[in-house]
Image 1 (cartoon, helix red, strand yellow):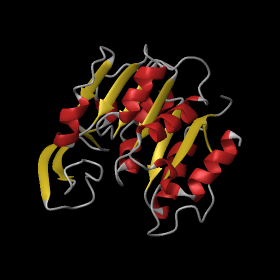
Image 2 (image 1 turned 30 degrees about the vertical axis):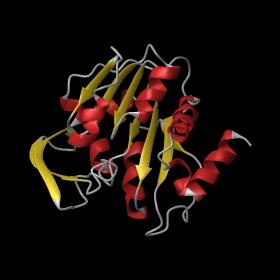
Image 3 (image 1 turned 30 degrees about the horizontal axis):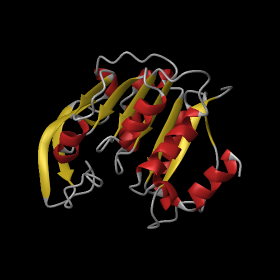
Image 4 (image 1 turned 180 degrees about the vertical axis):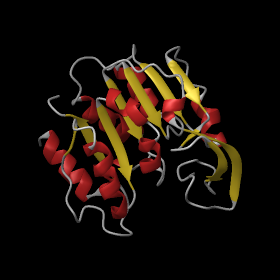
Length: 218
């Protein structure tokens, strides 16, 4: 089965890569890295949870600098236990504005569904930040994964011009209405492509899927 065929299968069956098994996340990480030319030097994990993608990067690209963002306190307490000098962890919620806001916590205390947008019974106030407001040095090749339970569009807007420094972008899509904004944001830079997308791939109310974008010509 070719990679493109696998990706089409993933998008037609969104839960194929959404399981909790580390091996699935390792597979997803490596699939995205195939679109890099050369060694991965920077990995940005937004919505890192307990760090399964961080583990994959540490294993397969041990020299890469990792920037991991996880605003859920329970998940973050596990994330920071990773022993790797190349990891820099942030308890920040990324957004398209620099402001104080309410972050809602997963009722299961696992951090999987914690979100700015999905209201739950538990919440904390924290500073929301634009990515381009942070002093982060992106060295290519760069892979960025965004899994933020509905806040993906705002986070991408918060990258500003720094999005041009990303070589491969994986975005979790939670609802079809996000697609026009997502494609407009990536189209503006004229160096991302999308593959495997079908209009019926994420019908309303039927799970999530990951879309992969990469620099044109890569």
